[in-house]
Image (cartoon, rainbow, N blue to C red; front, side, top):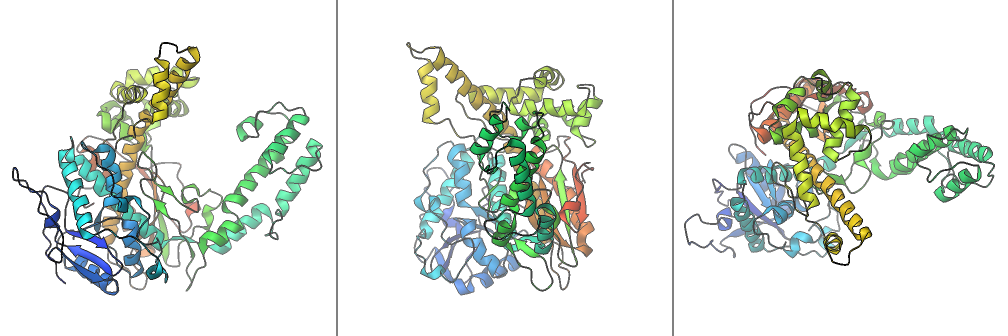
Length: 599
C-alpha cells in the first residue's frame, strides 16, 4: 500500500490520517480532510475505499516503520484519534513515530479555546480503543472504533478552528507540543524507569527493619508505636488511626486541632519527636514500601535493572501539567531515589530547570527587568542583587505570592516592592486574577484556556446580588471570587511553564532520535518527567552529548515560545549512575542553540 502523502502548507501539518479498526489501521489521503481556501468552496467529502486503505495489524508496524524511513525531512505527521490507543501497539513492535496529531488531546484544548467550539464525538470521550499495554485478549475485547470518515471530519473541524483563532501560530504550536507529549508519555511507559529492586529493599530495611509478615508493622515502626503509647499513657492506641491519635493527644493535655506535621512541630512534648518520625516512616511504607515494590517494579533481566512503569496522563491537570494514573511517579521521595539506577554501561542525565514559572511570567509580560534578574542563573538571587529584597528567602516568598495570590504576613510587605520593580509582570497576573474573580476565562501564552466557572459558582455570585441577600451571602460570594481569582492568576503562569516544558521535552526527544545508537546498547531515551525536571537514560559513551542536548533544547524551547526576547532558562544538569546522586542545589548556565522546531 502506498497512499499519497500530500502535506497541506499553512495548516497543521497533515500527512496521514489514521483510524484504528479491529483489522488494522485505516490510512487515507489527508487531502480529504483539508478545507479549501477558495471562497464558497465546500470541503471535499471523505469516505469509501477511494479515500482510505486498511493495513492489517500484523503488517502495521513494518508499514509505519517504512513510512518513517522513507519520508524526507522530519517525516510524516500521523493524525489519529488517540495516541494512547495506537502507540503502545507500535512500541511493542519496536516502532517509534516522529510526530503525530492527537485528536483527543487537541479537541480538549480547542473545546475551550476555539471561537466556535463543538461537542466531542463519542469516540473521543470513550475509553481508548486499545488498552495501554496490548495483550492476548485484545481481539476478544469489544471496542467501538470510529469510521475513517469521522476521524477525517474531526480533523477538518480542528484545522478550521485553529485557522479561525486569534493566534493560530501559537495554537498550532500548543497542539503540536501536546501531541508530542502524548508520544513521549507512551514511550516512557514502554521503556520504564530503571529501578534496582535489591537496593530499594535495602533502603526499606535500613529505615524500617526487615520486611515483616503481611499485616504486621516493621520493627522500627512497632518500637515507635510502643514509645508513643507509653508517652501518651494510651496502651491500646493505634497511631495509624488519626481520630484515635488526636483523642489520645488531647487526653494528654495537648490543645491540637489535627495531627498535621506543622501543628505538631509547634508543641513542646516528648511525644512529638517519635510521633513525627513514626508518621514519616509510615508514609514511606505506605507510598513506596514492599507492597508498592511488588506491584509497580518489574524484575530486571539479562543483567539490567528492573523497570518502574506508570501511565502518564498528558494534560491531566487543567493548566496542562501532567498527572499519572498509578504508582505515584510524580512523587518519588528522595529517600527512594537511590533505587533508580542506570543499567550497566548506561548513566542517567538528570536536568532540572530553575524557577520556570517566574521566567515564563517575565516572557509573557515582556518584563525586561524581571528577565534580567534571572539572566545569570538564580532569579531569586538576582532580585536580591538588584536591591528589591534583602534575602533570597524573602525574594522567593514574594515571587510565589505574586504567582499564587498570597497577601498575608511577610508576603503582604514584599508584594508592593515587586509591583514597583516589575510592574509589567505583576500587572499581568493581577489582571488575570481580576478576570477570574469576575467569572471570566484567561489563556496561557500559547492559548490553553481556563475552564469557565460552574453553575454552583454562578449561583453563589447571583445570590449575592439579589435584593434579600444578607452579609453571609455577600461574604461567601467575595471569598469564592477571590479563590477563582487566585486560580486564574496562577493558571496563566503555570500553564505557560507547562508549555515550555513540553517544548523542552519534544526538542530533547527529537535530538535524541538523531543520535546514532551505541552498538549492543541502543539510543538514549527519556525515562522520567516531573514538571520542570527530566531524566534521560543514555549509554555512558553518549552522556556528554546528551547533557549538551538537554541544555540546548531548553534554550530552543524558550525561543519557540518567546522569540528573541532575552530570557534564559538555566538548568542544573548532572550525569549520575543513581538518581539520588544528582545535586540540584545550584543551577548552571543554559546552553545556546539555534531554534529548529520539529514538534
